[in-house]
Structure formats: C-alpha cells, structure tokens
Image (tube, rainbow, N blue to C red; front, side, top):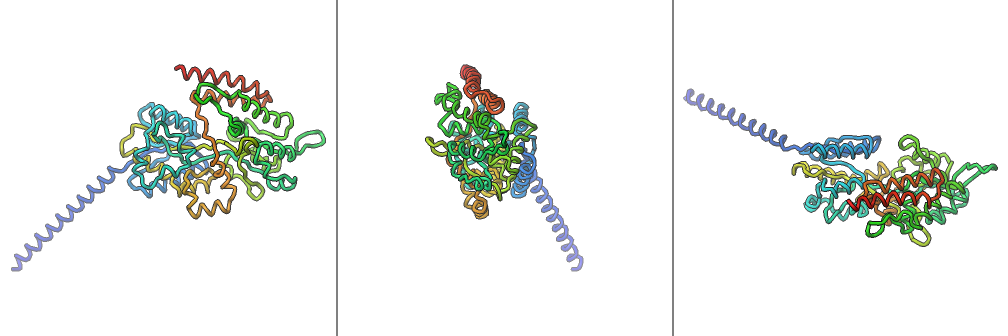
Length: 440
C-alpha cells in the first residue's frame, strides 16, 4: 500500500510539473505573440524648446495609454526641415507614419495622392466627431470628399496693446475695432521729440506679408479670381491697403517695424519694444501669449473696416498627416496618435500651456479649460477671431505667388517703394507662374 501510494504521488507530481511547464510555454508564447503584434511608428515634427517638450509629453502619455503602440518622436529644426525629411522618406519608399505639416504641403501632398485618407478611421472612431473640429481648419484638407489630415493646433495673428499707455493717453481700445480707428489711435499714441524723432510708435505691424494680407482680406480682397486663372494682387483694394501701411511706416512714422536678423529675432525685438514701452501695441501671434505680461498688456481681435464688417484675418493650423502605403496596423496606430493629440483634453491643454489654439469646440466644455478662459480673457480673443477667419491661401504654383508677395512686402515695408509699383511687379511674376502651372 505504501509503495502504491508513493507511485501515485510520483505520478501526480510529474503530471503537475508537466502542467506547469505547459502553462509557462503557453504564457511565454502569448507574450511573444503580443510582442510581435506591437506596432512601432515614427512621428516627424519641427518644434523645439517648450513646444517640443509638450509634444514629447503627449507622445509619452499616448504610449503609456496604448501599450500595443510605440510612437517615436523625431524632431527637426523647423517645419521646412520636417517637410524635407518627409519628402526624402517618401522618395525612398520609407516615409514616417505620421508627420506634422504646415497647411500648404498638407494640401499639396493630399492632391498628389501621397497621404492616406482618414474617412474610414473617422467613421469607425466613436470618440472623435469631425464636426467638433474648428471647421476653418478641418475643411482645408478635405479634398473631393476625402479628409486627409487632422488639425493639431491653430494660430491666428491678433492685436496686443499696452492698456496702461492707452489709458494714460485717453485712447479707447474700441478704436482697435476698425482700421480707420487704428490709424487714428496710432497717430494719437505716437510720441516724437522736438526734432521729430520717434520716441514711441503708436503701433508695430509684424514684418512680412501676413498682416497686410489680413487687412486686404478684411476688405474683401482675394489673391486669385474665382475661376483661379487671374492673379488679383494688383487690384485697387490691394494697392490702396498696402499703400496705407507704407505711408504709416515711412511718411507719417506712426508705425514702426523690425525686420531681418537671425531666425525669429525681428519678432522678439517687436515684443521687447511693447514690453519696454517703445510702442503702444503690435500685431502678433496667438502663440505670443506665453511671452507677454498681461498685467500691462491686453489682447484684441484684428480690426475690420468700417464698410466691410469684422476682421477676416487668416486662421491656420498645423496638421497631422499619415503617409500612404503603410501597413494596416501602422496606419491605424498613426491615426490613433493623431486623434489623441487633437482630442479635446489634449487640445485644451495645448492652448493653456502654449497659447496656440485648441482645435476642438468641445474643449471649452472641460472645466479646467473653461475656467482658464474665464480667468485669462486674452486667451479667448484668438478663439473669437476664428469665428470670422479666412482660410489660408494655398498657392497653386507651389510658392511662386507667395514669394512674389513676400518680395513686394519687403519693398513696401522696408524700402518704402509705392504699393502700386511693388504689387504691379509682383502680379506680373505671379501671373507668369500661374499661367505656367495651368498650361502644364
């Protein structure tokens, strides 16, 4: 009996060992299988400093919440470098899964069938409502009924003014509602010494074509004719509007402008002049809000024109796109990451931390963001401006029209060349480029 009992126990032990080993093999196989199903993708972007840190934080958060996906952030110096890296990847047949692009290349690549359409992903995503995106941003990358990108964050140029200087000089901020009022306010706020040298400018537009184009759009001007065949940048509304800026800067000297320098030097020099009281206000980005002292500065939407209603200043976004030709798993992973980046919670956080704009309407329903907007009224100003914003112009020539406008803006703002002459030359160059594009 003892011998039989011993044998039975031995058989039982052997069986138990076999069972345990089998379980270990099953678990090991399962982990190997799970590991094999993990998806790794690259996300190219061109943001540095604090913005880059925010992107990396979003990537880390996403990876922790999605253990089956690993997003690797690949940083470049700016949007141009990012674009070049994306193009190189496409040419080599090894593009990144997801990339952050400016509007023009996002639209161009979609038109060239280099991006994956997102319609099916959006249709299958119960947590992402396409109608919840800021439509001025979202609709730009909808081509022939296909959605090719998700806006990640937005920006628009607004006004920042020294409310203490306005108050001291008895100038109402309501003057900033129209360009006619802006001109009057700038004249009143400018200070010159006995020799006529400017001690304080009434206003500082930002160097480049953007502010002047916003002013043109707000008067109903457009870059191309409705049929897209004629360049309109030397029309009366363009010439008259840009000439006003030339007179304000070079003849009346009620507006000053910083230009040139290294990188964004001109931009920060402009901000410094406002903070130091060398100018009563300036036109800058919604993203400047992290650099300003709102104890002395307030924000305001850009002016409209008395006969044309509120501003039509451009609102634009930075887009997340997915390269065409990925595996089904990589494409799905890339979509999940872009949807996560632009989710209401993350979109709200992006604006609170950076000053750049949320792209989701429902973000305002988040208590923390709602309280932030209530306690920081300057943060609400760019969102209000988006309600009447124009879409950014997408250059059908690949940049020749915009380059002509850049050169004309330099002539007007820096050299003091008449707007009529500068825009006539620009229009001729732009029309040749457009004709060449249409005929090829």
